[in-house]
Amino acid sequence: MYTADIHKTPRTYLPQNFIVTDWAVLEPFFKELLEREIGDKTSLEQWLSDQSELEAAVSEDACWRQIKMTCDTENKSLEEAFNFFCMEIQPKIQPYSDALNKKLIASPLLKELDADKYHTYLRSIRKSIDLFREENIALQAEIAVLQQQFGQITGTMMVTVNGTEYTLQQAAKFLENPDRNLREEVYRKIQDRRLQDKEKLNELYDKLIVLRNKEAMNAGFDNYRDYRFKELGRFDYTKEDCFRFHDAVKLHVMPLVNDIYRHKKALLGLDVLRPWDADAEPEGSTPLKPFKTGNELLQKSIECFTQLRPFFGECLEKMRSMHHLDLESRKGKAPGGYNCPLAESGAPFIFMNAAGQMHDVTTMVHEGGHAVHSFLAHPLKLNGFKEYPMEIAEVASMSMELFSMEHWETFFDNGADLAKAKAHQLERVITIFPWIAIIDKFQHWVYEHPVHTHEERTAAWNSILKEFQDDVFDYSGVEQYRSNSWQRQLHLYEVPFYYIEYGIAQLGAIGMWMQFKANKQQAMDNYCNALSLGGTKTLPELYKAAGLEFDFSP
Image (tube, helix red, strand yellow):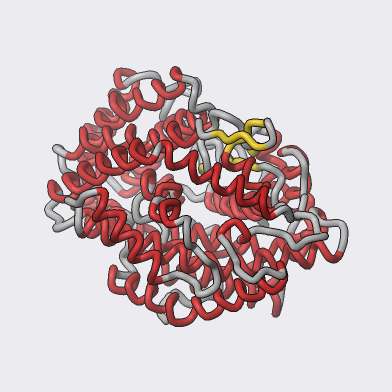
C-alpha cells in the first residue's frame, strides 16, 4: 500500500532546471501568481498547485542551505549561502506570500473547494494573514540568522580525554564507563567547556528574546509566548493546559523517576548517587556498544526497520541511495539531530552526532520515525497539506523508538545486553518528562518577563529545576553547572516553545505501544494511516486516526 519508491515531484509550472539563485529569478513567478485571473474551480485548483510547486522549490533550497551549514559550521561560504537566503530572499517572499494568501481567502470560488479536505489548510492560511506584519520581515530575517549561531558556537566545543580530542557528544561515552573517577573527570571537563562560552550563549539568547518580543508586540500580542502559540498553530490546547501538564509531571511522574534512580543507585552499589553516575554501568559490566561506525548504525537500523515492516526499511534504504544522511559526530559539525523533510525530493535528510552509544540507537530510530512520516505524507497534493503539527510528528518518532525495540537484536546479539538496552529505553521514556516540563516552564517565564537580568534568569531557572528535582542524586558542588544547564538545549535558541510537543507525543507513543503489544499489525496500520494524513486533519482527528485520544491532562 505504501511505497518508499519516491520520486522528485514533477514540475509543471517551474522550468525543470530551475534553481534558486537570487530574488530576481524568483520574483516573476510570484508576480504571475498574484496577477493571474482565476475564473472557475479548476483554475483555482491549478493556481493552488502552481503556488505549491513554487513553495516546494523554495523550501527545499532553504533546507539544503541549512543542512550543508550544520554539517560543516566552519565553512564560511556555506554560512554565507544560508544567511543570503535569510536576509536577501526570504524577506522579499513574505509580502508576496501574504498577498497570495489574501487573494485566496478573498476568492468567491473558495466555497467550491471541498470543505473537509481544505479545512486545516485554510485555517492555517487565515492564521498567517492574522500574524503578518510588514515591520516584522526584517526582524524575522535577523532572528533566522542569529538562531544558527547556537550551532556555530557549540559545534566547536571539544574536550581532551586521555590525550585525545573529542566533541562533547563523543566524550559523553566516557560517562558510561565503570571507572567512577574517569566519569567525574569527563563530566567536569564537558561542563567546564560549556561554561567557557556561557557569556556568548547568554548574549545570543538576550538578542533573540528582544527581537522575538518585538515581533510579538508588532503583531499586537502581549508577549512572545502568546504570539508563538498562534504561529505554531496550537488550535487545540492552551497555555493553561501546559501548566496542568507541568503539575501532572510533578504529581504522577516524579515518584516513578525517584524509583528508577533508587534502583540505579542500588545497581551501582553506591551510597551516594552523583550526576556523573547517571549513565554509568556497574563494576564488572561494560557499556552497551551497539555499533562502531555510522555506516554500521545505518545498516543495523535498516535491518531492524525491515523486520518491523519492510516499508520502514525501504525508506532508510532509499535515503542511503540518495546520500540523505550524515550520522557521525565530528569537529565543526553542529550538535543535535534532526530529520529535515525535503518538499520536492520527498525523501528527507537525517542529521545526527553518533558516537557509538546506546543513546545513538534511540536517536537513529527516532529520526527514522520522522523519516517514515515524511515518506507517508509526501504524496499529498499540496505542500501545505504536508505541514503536519509537531504534536503528531513526535508521535511518529517516539512510537518508532518503542516499536523498534521488538527487533533490537540487530544491535545486541546477547540476551543480557538486549534486556539492558530495553530497560534503558523504557526508563528514558519516563525520565525525560521532568526535563520536558522544566524546559517548557522556563520558556513561559522567559517570555512573560522579557526584560530581565542574567541573575534573574538564572534564579528563575534554578527555581524551576528545583521544582522537578529528584530525591536521589546529590548535586552538591555542581550548582554552577546546573545553573547553566539550560544552555545545552538547542530548542531554546532555534525553535522556541517547541518542547511540550515531546511530552504530549510521549504519552501518544506509550498509547501506540500499548496497541502494539495487543496487536502489532493493527497498531502499525493505525500508525501509517494517521501519518499519511499529513496536516489535512485537526490534531484530535490525527490522534483518533492513530487509535489515540488527544489528552495530556493529569
